[in-house]
Every structure is written in structure tokens, then in C-alpha cells.
Image (cartoon, rainbow, N blue to C red; front, side, top):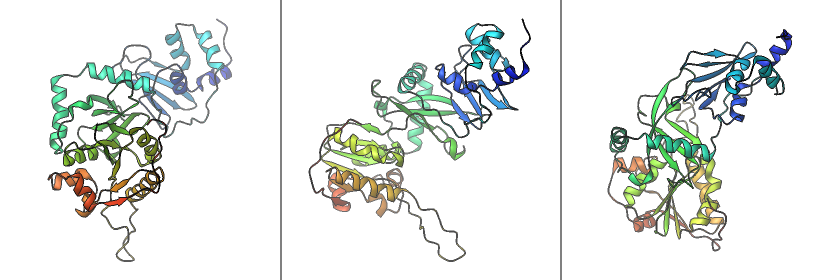
Amino acid sequence: MPKLDPTILTQARQVDLICYLHAQGHEPVYVRNHKGMFHSPLREDRNPSFSITYKNGAWKWVDFGTGEHGDGMDLLMQLHQIDFQAAVKLLLKLPVTTTPQHSSTRYILSPREVRRLYCQWKDRMTPELGFYIRQYFLERDLAFPEELGLIYLERIVNETGLTLPYIGIPSPSAQPHLMTSLECRALDDQTIEKQYRRRTLGDKALWVVRRPASGILITESILDCLAGNQLLQNRTSLCAINSINNIDRLVPCMQQLRPSTVYLALDHDTRSATPTNTHTKKRKKDPGPRAQEQAKDQLLDAGFRVVEVTHHVRAGVKDLHKLLKQNPTPISLEQLETFGIVHTPAHKQHHGTPC
């Protein structure tokens, strides 16, 4: 085999292996600081253990499950069963990366990939894992929502290989043809770092439970929605926005669901945003009240009747989950109307695209 120019080999080693595997259909578990973690593309790998790193001007990989490691040529030789020169030739056709752009990058799984992973984890469910999930809701004073298709899963959350157990909540629903993402909540959210407590697999979407009821309750988180459902005793449909960045998705979704009344109960910050003296550091304002105002205005403009829920605000707590813990007394829809802020639209609603 003729000796290859070292410059050519340097160029081949600079081809971004994270992008290459992603283009080949291998979804990364996470990507951060020029490092990525995958299920091994070279073997069956239930627990992601294939690491890719950019260091000293070259991309390298390590399969912690087998101990194998190497550069881009080594990977392609095994992946495609080709020789060294063919691997170099293939890599030279691809763009090189001298300044990786993967810092803080999060790949979004496709709905198809989300559904595939969900089915895998669901098939592995056991009575013991189901017990852990039930215990999670019991410890949070919530009734177990069996109809939501919850699963137990484990995810690697950083480059050290830290693996944590989560509950996976299908979104927008557990119906396979509708599922686009999994909202994951850490089973032990009391002792782990805040950044690991919530994960989303797929595109963060609205979470919806449809019922024959004419009204719908909208909260920020799924747990708040379940708490509100418990307080209202299943009298409304449910919707959790999962992120205030999803506010703009509310109107199209409501246009499909066509509720007679939208009960809006986004988070309310109970802390003062104003310093008490010049030496007090000014607190960052909570986005919840602003999100509530934005959602209300958009829904009214679209012709929906809106009732701003104030029970948690009056109780001095941030959300409906904290209200349930403080006072589990059921709340009627009439009480929501009486103590809430009622907004009547200037024109009738019109219907648009599905959520």
C-alpha cells in the first residue's frame, strides 16, 4: 500500500465524526463541549457507551463497551467494512472541522426515532419499574395517571458517563401516531443537580389530554396539569406548554380542540422583584406572569374566552402543584370563574391547523 501524504491524513482526521454518524442515522444521546455520546454504531448497545471527542486537531472515538478506539479511518473501516485507503478517500469527500461548532448543541430526535425508543423502553417495563413510577407520583401527592403510557428509562447526561433514571411521559399524547417527544423527569429530583432534573427527547411540544369536557386547563408543566386535574376532579381537558417558548403554539392547538373556555394557570412568582434597599441584589423577574399575559392576549385575539386562574396566586404559591400540596380541597369550575379573571373575546374564534 503506497504511503499517504501526512497532510492528507491530517485533513481526514478533521472530518466531524459527530455529524458523520448523525448523517448516517445514528442519533447522539447528547453533544456538549466538542464531545458526543452515542449508542455504538458497531454493535448492539442498549446503554450508550460510544464516545466521540475533538482534541488536538483530530476527531477520536472510544467504545467503552469493548475498549476499542481510534480515529475516523478506524471507524469507517469497521462501520463500512472497507480498507484504510477507501476510508481515507471517503473522509476526504467530507468537509473538515478545524473549529467544531458543537458547543451547547442539542440534536433533536425525529418523531420516528422517539417512537422507536419509546417502544423499546416500554417492552422492557417490569412490575418493579412500574412500582418506582407509582412511588414517584405518590411522593408528590399526585394520583398515578395510568392512562398516560409512562415508562422508566435511563439516560447518560454528561461526558463522564453519569447515568440517571427518568420517567418518560409521551407528548403530546401516548397515541403512537401522535407522539413527537418524551418529556423526562428524574426519579430522584431532590438530590441531583437542577440541570439534570428534566430532559426532552425530541422537539419540546405541547402536552395534551383530550376529554369530552368543553373547557381546557393550561399550565406550564405536566405535573402542574395533573395537580390541577386532581383539584378539578377531571372536569376539563388538559394542556401543558412545557416551555414558555411554546406560547405561540397554543392558538393553533386550541383552534383544533375548540374549547368553550380556556382556564389559564401558568406559573406565578411569589418573590418580590424589587430590592428592599440599595444593598439588596435585584432579583431576576420570573417569566411566568409575562408568559400568562402573552398567552391570554393571543387567545383573546383568536376569539377564545379566557379565565385566568388565581387560586394559586391567592394562596401565595407559584403553581397548581404547590397549591395541591398546600390544600387538596377540590375546586369547582364555578369557583374558577368566581375567583378568576374572566376575559371575553371581541369576536368569535376561528379554526386553524392542528396542534
